[in-house]
Image 1 (cartoon, each protein chain N blue to C red):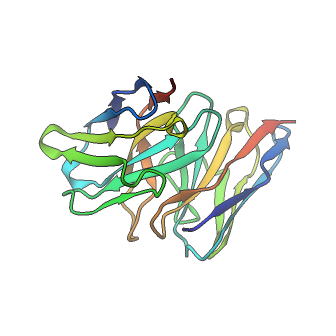
Image 2 (spheres, rainbow over the protein chains, first blue to last red; image 1 turned 45 degrees about the vertical axis):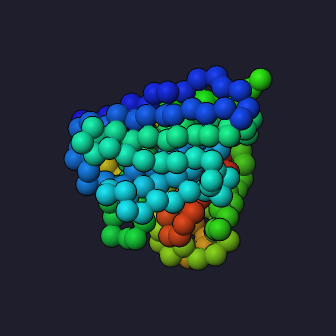
Length: 122
Length: 107
């Protein structure tokens, strides 16, 4: 069974930093690209960042570029999101998400973690 | 960046009725379009990918159609468990983008 378990969320002051982790199990983690997607309270879904299976390719939403860093450790089956210079508008539930491999250059998401809440407030 | 626009924002439907949800892309995404269902307090669930292919375990009452810039999700006969928020998402280009969602509520 595929499982994605996020951790590391919490309350942080504006300008602060936080590191999210996602522990993956039930599939060959090193074979999949991975994603972070967030959802502000009461709002819709927003893609944040993606990383290829070998970390060769990394993409960010403009809203987080230069502040967030995605990384992975295939030996530990883990995905990370280092978030710096946090702003109030970064307040959201952050989901770790695995794509469904389809015959296309990019892929939809078929597995999501339960999410971890990040609150940026003074 | 491709902007995804969903309509209507809220759809009021009686159980057993048909629901039709729309999604429009600001430029062509070919058939690289997915639909997700999200219930309160839960993560999204993949319903449809490739614009019309049902994901594993998704009931046949859910169907998707369209290509290019215009897409539709149809729920043929709404069940109580189908009342939720539905999102479309394009995966044709970076950055990946989601629509704003359609809430399907009980009439």
